[in-house]
Image 1 (spheres, one colour):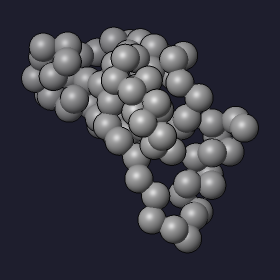
Image 2 (cartoon, rainbow, N blue to C red; image 1 turned 60 degrees about the vertical axis):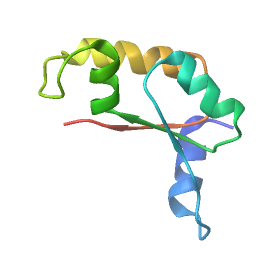
Image 3 (spheres, rainbow, N blue to C red; image 1 turned 120 degrees about the vertical axis):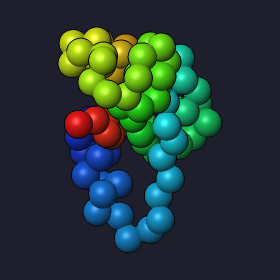
Image 4 (cartoon, one colour; image 1 turned 30 degrees about the vertical axis):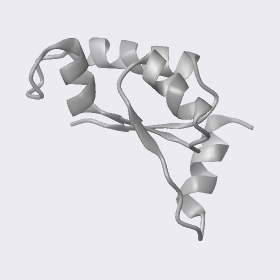
Length: 83
């Protein structure tokens, strides 16, 4: 099933669903292997993993590169929380 379809089902579910935070490809794979239905990717945790503050020090291309690695290594949807 496509990730977009999975995302829609999660958001429209009448049940309480759980997702877990990940900050790189390895942690995203761990989330999937632990049977969570989705991944929460936080700008804060991605920035922290890169060793920079959460004040837009990481440029968009750097953040998106991390999310691309996460997506390439998993089959579940990723919800990205950035500003």
